[in-house]
Structures are given as structure tokens and as C-alpha cells.
Length: 413
Length: 91
Ligand SMILES: Cc1ncc(COP(=O)(O)O)c(C=O)c1O
Ligand SMILES: [Zn+2]
Image (tube, protein in one colour):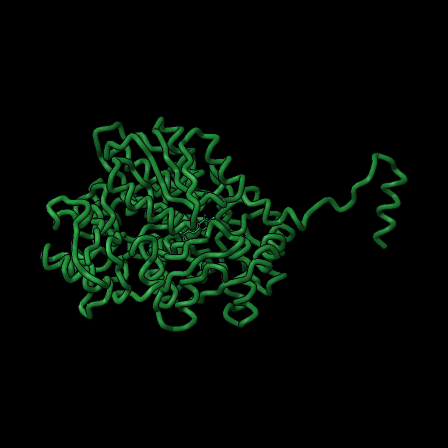
């Protein structure tokens, strides 16, 4: 499309053509998609977006849509345009008057990763790839497997061997090759960086990463549109690599730049698990130095010890006046239960991290009661049931006799 | 002392397409210096103006990320493999 200018290095600004590359050949920095914002601003309007599909593709002009040898058929399972719902009961529990949830558990493979994958594989097809692949902490593997199946692509998904059972099954069912690595996600990552150099596959978060990353902007676009084309005061997002948080911030900038929303200050804040908090640690110690860690947390989807977008996440949070927090495993589980029992939303461990970090931040006086705050709930709780299985058995186990039931109820008093 | 250096795709233009090269050096810093001498220009892509490893470059000696060891001073045993790996987005 005409408003794509190519790829540009985030570190040194060097430009490159649109292709399956992710690293600047000059300085090894990450490449990012560059747009002509004047052309983009002329092409978009609130009305045109509202008339688009009820999916992330309503924001197609803001996404890298490539012309290519293939018919411009998107790889699209309907990801995005998920509900933005007010959360008054959770808000009351936390001490917030204007809290909202962006419910990204409601995606085709039940996490926000469907956004990035739909964009990445649509580009991959136009670049002529027939095999999709990824390095994943679980959710991305589920999503790549699902989208590749629907697109008729072969798929190889690489994951740590110790993942939750549901995340393995919910990849395997779509028919990819699931490669389980005895090690951490960072070991998976390292292998995939090398495999991507040797095989002609579209690794969504390696060689087609610049396109992949753009998909997460749609969370920010949707939040603003669903608030009636207004930016929220504050967004709280979970961080693994930090890419999603960075792109939500970028989305708000783009909406202002193209005149779709009025300029107003926003804050963006990041949530991590204490067992893997390299970005939050760099924020708190003020060093700005993101030091890799060896992850050990119940929030396996967020267990990236060497976060590729950590520096940019720090920049975004500092620039907007946000905060970063991290929480222990027991707080994560309590956060999952609090969210479900107040708002009826069952999130995976990453959602528990977001809610528990928000709670911490409110207690520390870092969030104003009246601030319009949106918590990004990025994955479905049925993917990580084992995290809670130990503490959530049946309340009563009885035979089917009324007197036993009555006894059980009476025992409560 | 000689090490095998694994060259990632984005750097292979500097090594005439070679995916591994043999370089002398007892520490990561020495290996990178000798790599740059053999393939001029590769050093500045991996090290910043202060001579430190750029923040988006990951270097491993065999299985160990050198940031968990001693950075550029990390020892490179005879016959070790030094891998240069770009950072990867999240998962
Ligand atoms: C459910 C969930 N939430 C959040 C994240 C964090 O995403 P990012 O790596 O973009 O920070 C992930 C990443 O794997 C995830 O699976
Ligand atoms: Zn660069």
C-alpha cells in the first residue's frame, strides 16, 4: 500500500526494503515498519474505520499490508475487535472509579497473539513463504498453529518442554510439528534465531518480526475507538518481551498524528512476574540496564528472561509517566481469582500478573482513583488451569441425596 | 587458542557468506577483535562507541550467555563455539 515506506532501524534509522529481515545490517538494531503519515492521515477517517470488518483488519491502513504474487487474501480467523468492558466491581475492590478491561481472552485462539500472527502470516504469504514457525512461551504457538492450518501452510512451533498441558494440546490439535526444547524460552529463542537463518521459513517473531509487532497496535486503536475516539488516561499491560506495551503506546501516537483522536496525555504502565522481571527491575533500580534473568514463575507465558523490547518498554513507560511493578506467584493466583470473581473474566496467569500489579500500584499511590485506566487481559484462563487446580476443588463432594446437601450447607454456618 | 564463531545471517555479507569462521583469542573481546581484523567492519556492528557489546547483540560461549559470565572478558576455552545471536521478539 502506498503509505508503507519500508523498514527502518529503531537504533540508527538506517532504511531497508520491505522483506523478511528483522535486524539492521549496520548496527544489529531491530527494524520497524515505516509509514508515510501524511498519506495515511489522508486515507483514514473514523467513518471508514467504523464501516470496516469487526476485526483488527478495520485498521488495515495502519498495518503492513503488502502487495505480492499471491491474491491479497488475508490470513484471518477474525482476531481483534474484542470487548472493552467497564469493570466497576474490580475497580471497587482495587479503589478505582473508572477501570476498564480490554478482554483479549476473546480471540480465535484465546490470546492477543492472534493479532500479531494474523498480520505476520498475511505478510509472510505475500513474501512467498509456505511454512510458518515461531519461538513461543505457548500462546504464540497456539496462534501460529491455528492460523497456519487455516491458511494451508506447514507449521513448526518451538516451545519450552515444561509448558502447561493445555498450551501443548492447543497447538498440536491444529496439526503443526511441535518442537519441545528442554530449556527456557531463551534457549528456544536462541535455537530459532539460528534455525531461521538456515531454513526458508517465516518465523513470525524472528525474520518477520517487524510485521508481527505491528499487530499489537490494534489493541490501542480499539481501546480509543471503543471509548468513543478518546484516549484513556492510563493503560496497564503485561510484559514478556515488552513488544505489546511498546506498540500500544505507538498506536496512541499514531491516532493523534493522523488526527483520529484529540491529543491528550496518556500513561502506560508495565506488569511482570517477580520470577521473571528484568524490565521492571531496570525501571525500579533506575539504571535503565535490562539485565537478563533465568525465569522461575507460574506465569510461563511471560517467562522471557532476555526481553528484546525491554529498552523500548522502559522508554515508553518513563516518557508517559507510568510505572512498572512485579508480583510474586501467590499474588498472581490471587489476581486471577479476584478478576474472575468480580468481573466474570477468567484470565490466564498473565492476566493475574496485570491485575495484581495494578493492585500494588494503587496501594503505592501510583494510580489516581478517577484516572480512566484500562487493564489489558491478554489470554484465557483455561490455558493455565493447573496454576489454580490445587486451590480450586469442589466446595462440597457428596452423594446425590438431599439430606447430605442440607448437611453440607449447614456445616457452613 | 582457536574458537569457532557462528555468524548470523545479517552479518554474513561481511564474511562472504560464511556461516562459521575460525578465529584466535582467549577471551570474547579478543575473539571479536580478531574477527574484525579478518573481516573488517564486523566489529562496529557488534560493539558500540565505548567498545561495549551493543544492547541488541547476544553473545554465547558454548551454551553460556556472556552477560551471565564476564561479558567481553569471558574466557573462551580452546575449541569453544562463540555464537552471535540477534534479540528475538516475544512469545
Ligand atoms: C498472554 C500473554 N500476555 C502477554 C504477553 C507479553 O507479550 P510481549 O512479549 O509482547 O511483551 C504474552 C507473550 O507471550 C502472552 O502470551
Ligand atoms: Zn541500525
